[in-house]
Amino acid sequence: MTHPLFETHRARFEGAQAACRSRACWSPFPELPSKYPDSAAAQARGLAAFQAHLGTDAPRSFRLDQPGQIGELGEEVSPYTQAPLGIRYPQADPDVLFQAAEQAMDTWAAAPVDTRLGVLLEVVDVLYREHLFEVAQSVMHTAGQSANMAYAGSGVNALDRAIEALVYADQAMRSVAPTARWERRFGPSQIVLEKTYRLVPRGVAVCFSCASFPTWNAWPSMMASLATGNAVIVKPHPATVLPMAITVRVFRQVLQAAGFDPNLVTMALDSTQEPLGKLLVKHPKTAIVDFTGSVRFGQWVEQHAHPALCFTETAGCNTVVLESCTDLDAALRSLATTLCMFSAQMCTSPQNIYVPRQGVRTPQGPVPLEEVARRLADAVAALTGDPKKAAMILATIQSDQTLALLRQLQAEGARRGRVLLQPQPYAHPEFPQARTSTPLMLQVGTSERDLYGEERFGPVSFVIACEDAADALHQATTDVRQFGGLTAFLYSSDESYIARAEQAYARAGAQLTINLTGAMPLNFAAAYSDYHVTGLNPAGNASLTDLAFVAGRFRITQSRRPAAAAS
Image (cartoon, rainbow, N blue to C red):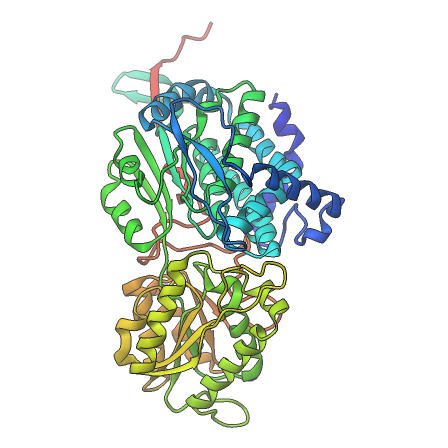
């Protein structure tokens, strides 16, 4: 018999299995906050729960009953109010966390697959039913996302990715037969063996969550490790602790209620002044590392995590090639929306826009490069001119460092190219103190590659003049191969050019979107359908979600013995 929790959530899990097979559009969750059951009351409860965490008059401690506490830390500042959240979280001794995690694993690893899946599906359900809007508010006031994006991208879509990881973990584990009867003749003897195969987890996983999208990568990474029998130590970014602290507490509560040691999931907190990341990666008991964040530290993790298994998603130069269009205005509107989405603080945001010097071919004739650049800048300006509209699409700037980068690039761009759009703060209609900026857009040539040849995190893009269409494709795919790229975008009405681009981007290892216009953001990644990151270029070595993301998190041991004689 399967575990009761698995039976409770069987329909949801089987729906996810079917979606992963078909790659069709599916989700068990409502896509908009307004469609959530009893939405107004649920949102009010979530806001109240978030506000209850805040230390408005004096710092307030976040209760997380885990071992090894040696103090408290907390330095989060809301990008919307630019005031400290006033929350202090338990700081733990890493050695104690690793010891507790190892001790918690034996019973968990020995549990049937259905039992582990049932408990983790219950975690998903509790996050959805009891904490979704609380998490969304915490993402808003740490990462700076808009309310709708925090609900969708950091809420229900992240839950979808979590379930997706469970589907692939189940698939990987069930591909191993538990027992076998093996017979073979050796000379005059018939040898009959009974073989037993065991799935053995690697050990303790360390999961790093990033500042801009803390839950989106962390939830599936945690699920992949736990489903395969491992324990997880969560290492949140110091700027966005609250979403992950809530997450860790929910995991611990559900695990304990199901009869398992809650120390299967703990949190290791650090500060920007005294980072803990390298110590955790190199800890002798670290068996798995999941890292999402900066390219610089991600590359260090990839180089130094051994012998731990390492899964990374960092960033890259996401590219656009504008070769020809049947409807240039529609293409530019779609591109402008994607450039503005969460102020381009997303790993899938486009940055480098390559256009042939002779312009973009359209049914009405070629449109000169200068006009293409101007029309794209006008499309972005139209989206950001109204503060109410800007608040919904741009949201806020997560870090002051991003504003400093914009100032630096604007000065460089004016000196070495042309400033198409100057960034400036906009007045958020609900939060007058919000840290905001409209996008910076620069026009440069390929000789300025040092300006755009890396991810420039934040609302900045480059329109880059190329010799011709072939050079545009070459420049764009070179970016991907050298600097990494998660997504790429192409506009062309030439099928032979599209075919060449598909091949070139496939070899470079970027996911390509072709001629997409309309309401859907170009960089939207659908759970159960879109593979996020290929692992084929410097933007990361792992994909959400495929079998490779989970299969290495456990290994297979076997025992064999002569079969008992038949009675």
